[in-house]
Structure formats: C-alpha cells, structure tokens
Image 1 (cartoon, helix red, strand yellow):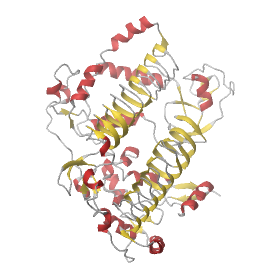
Image 2 (tube, helix red, strand yellow):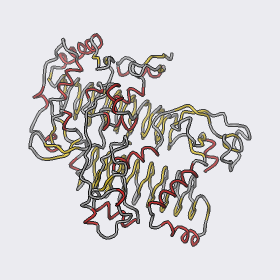
Image 3 (spheres, helix red, strand yellow):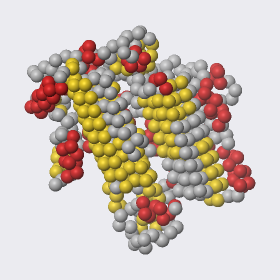
Image 4 (cartoon, helix red, strand yellow):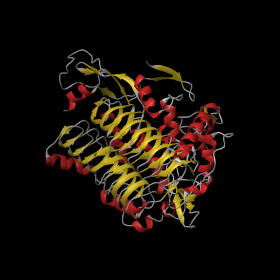
Length: 594
C-alpha cells in the first residue's frame, strides 16, 4: 500500500507507492527518507557541467583546464595521466575504521585520490579542448554534454550536429542558432520544439516546415509568416526585410512570436513513442515515470538526462545510462553498468558497486575512489570474496546505527547518496543551481557547499554600449577584444562580466547575418533555460473547453470526442498551473495540429 513520509530535508510529505517498494526490494535498500525533489537536488549538487577553471596536473605538471575549482581541494590529474597505467588507486587503500562514520571515510579518500581534470573521451576530440562531458567532437568550443558534433559552440545536450551555435537540446541538425529542443533541423534560428524544419525562424512546435517565420503548431507547411500562408514570391519579398537580423528586429520578433505562441494550445508533454510515461522530453520509453530528458528507458522513475541505449530498472538516476540496469541514487553512471547504488561516475561493465566514485570496469566495490578494473575492494583496499562481503555487511550495519549527520542535522543512512557538503563543487556552479536556483545566503543555510568563486572581472576593452551590431570584416581584431556583458554581474546566472568571441563564432555571425551578442555565454545559457519547460510536474486539467480553450483565447479548428463540453482529462505536466500557456491533453492537441 502507499505510504506517506515526511522528507528528512525539506520536511514536506511525499508518497512511496507499492511499485516503489518492489524496486527497493530488488536493490536491497530501505525506502528513502528524502523526497524525490530533495534527492535530485542532492545528486545534482555533485554535477558541474559548464564551469571550467585553469589547473595544473599534479602528476606531469602540465597546464590544463578542470571542472574542479582550485578551492575544491581535489587532487587533479590531466586525463592522459589519469587514464594511464602509471598509477594505481589501490595505493591509497585504507582499513575501515568502525569508530568513524563510513561516509566520512569515503570523503577523506575522495580528497586524496587523484581525479581527472574533465569528463569525457579525450582521445576522440579534435581541436575541441574547451569542452566537458563530451566525446567524438571536431572543432567544437564550450560544448557540454555532447557527442558526435563538428564546428559547434556554446551548447548543452547537443548530439550529431554540425555548424550550430547557442543550442540547448539539439539533435541531428545543421546551421542552427538559438534553438531549444529541436531535432533534424537545418538553418533554424530562435525556435523551440521544432522537428525536420528548414529555413525556419522564430517558430515553435513545427514539424516538416520550410521557409517559415513566427509560426506555431504547423505541420509540413511552406512559405508561412505568423501562420499565414503566402505564395513563394510573396514570402520571399516579405522575408527579405528580416535580413540581416538587427538586435531591435530580433527583440520585436521575439515579443510578437512569443505572444502568438501563447494564443495556441501546446501538448501537455514533449514525447515521442512512449507508453505509460510521465514527465517531459521523453522518447522511445515505456513505464517511465516522473522523468525528464530521457530516451530508451523502461521501468524507471525519477530519472533525468539519460542517453539512448535502453536503460531499465532505474530510480533516481541523473545523466548517462546506455545499456544500464538496476540503478538507484546514481549520477553519471552507465555503459552496461548493473546493480549500482549511490555512485558517481562508475562506468563501463561495472557491476555491484555502492558508494563509489570514478570507477572504471570495477565489480563488487564499496566506498572506493579512482579504481580501474578492480574487484572486491572497500576504501580502495582489496579483499578476498568472503572477507569483502563480511565487511560490507558490517559497514551497512554501522551506517544505519551510526548515520552521518551533516552541518544542519540531516541524517544519511545506507541507501542515501553522498551529502552535498562533501561535493567538490560549490552549489552555484552545479546543475542543482540550474534546476533549483538559490541565493548565496540560502545555499549555506540549506546545507550545500559554498565558497567564494569571485568574479573573473576581465579587463573589458569594449563596453556593452559600444559593441557593434554586425561583424563587418575585422574578425581578427574583434577576436582579441573583451566585451562587457550586459548584465555586468548583477544577475544570478554566473555572469562572467566580460567575454571573448572566437574567430569561428564571429565568422558564423557574419555568414548568417546575425548581430554580435551582448551577454556572456553563461547568461546566454540561462536565457535558454528559462524558455525550456521546468523539469518538475504539476497536476492540471486539459484547457480544451469544447469549441474554445478554457480562457476563450483559442478557437478549436476540429470537433473533439467530448463535443462542446469541457475535456475531463487530467494529467501531470511541466507547465506550471499559473502559466499563461494553453495546455491540451494529447487527444485534444492532436485534433488541432495533425
């Protein structure tokens, strides 16, 4: 039966359902005492995707860049040194001390064992050093969580793309700019939720469209402006006035199109080929609940950022996947991993791991850091099979009888992920801040790690008011300037106050007739995040009210199965209850656009 518990962290009630207890039984862990939101926030505080810092490899002394700030206290190796056979994580092994809390002992190991400077397959990168959580890139810059891209810059969650800039969730596309959740698009700018579109500007939720501007909910249309059909010649003449796109034109177009978008219904969920799923941005999945930005998942719950490759039987998993199974409270775990609990970045044929960090090909490990292809290890010390399991059970008993207490008194027992205050990352540079923004004051009060990163405050050479509109011909000289960010550090978006532009970036703006940006890359990224749906769910009823939407702002173009009465369908959606969007259930939405 369903059980209601009070969250150890936020003190709000949450529910644990019968199917949840079945999963916890498979994993041999107790049901959680933290609610799903607090569990996600805790894991996300251990993930730094976009903040990169200068560093020195503490083995070969080579200068490098790293996800770990100097203040973190992490021992950093460059990736060639870390992945080499020149060192062995067993060298750092220690005996378990039953008088001390186990999680504290794992923390001590974490800050002694070397970690690689960045995440990703560095051997598959060509001229793409300033990237993180990536593989198979060529000529890419400041790209994160991305694979198989060429000539792409300033994007997150970008896969199989070419010559695209400023993207969030872009797949299989080329020559795209300022897009969010688009796939298989070409020359698509300032658009959201579009698929298989070409030469499309300022549009939303369009599929198979070509040569359209400011449109919404169109299917296989051509030569449309603000959803009005034109002849080819009419469209060509009208579209000419939008090129090149000045800053004032972009502002006016965005204001007009976003107002238009609000006057049309949107589907309650972004999904493709799903069965019995809740959440948002889900594709090719089955029986996946309360999950976001996931593909090819089955029998999963509370998961996020999972890549294609069929991940099954997973709860509370953040980022990665790929032929993984039986995952619980995991972060960046995948590639045929199985039976993994409370681990951070254990990958590649990993089995039966708990409370382990940066493990490659390990099996039967508990509380280890930086091991490769080892088995039966605890705190980086190797045991016989029998001794390993005996000590493991002893430690689990100690974790439950002597739980770790963090700085604000929250308890962590067996089954809980690592405390946020152990994280090498300040909350402000973690994924948690993107999902759940907090003020600097609130960060410390809520038990997250916080240290002053300071402002870069680069020596600005071009004030924001003096940033020219278009590139012109002086690419080389412009690439040497430091431009002032329009926010000037006044936002909560990790503003760098000043920024540079690369030659390739300037050439793209020149080729596409785009104005130079006036915000730094961090602030530009946060503007895109604001336009993506929230990765949380709320209960809502379909806004279809018979012949009109519930607020009367939209008139249906088709007769729905419920006729002239209101649609009774209720659902969980990432559109907030107080949002101005017209949100339809799947059946009503398809009647309007298919």
